[in-house]
Image 1 (cartoon, one colour):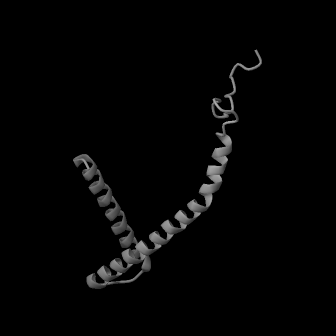
Image 2: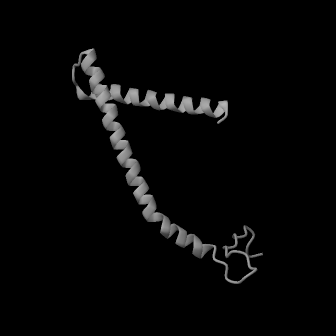
Image 3: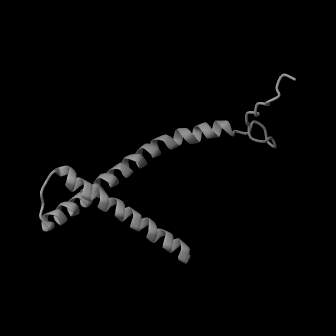
Length: 102
């Protein structure tokens, strides 16, 4: 990995951490709880832990749905690009001419 790629990954990770920290702060505010610093740290830690679980679950759901949809997509593309005869290019729809009718 190049130094530029490593730097970009670090930047992305820092942004991700900032977003999670900001969201954790908002969760504390939205809870309406008056917490001392130690309790606040525990609250934020639990929030981050549970948020990871939620995000993992959502990623798994998306992956499952994607796997269900891919076979139909492949079938659709197979039909769209199917070659009727050997030596013939894939079947595609011709683009409409803006000067049609002349």
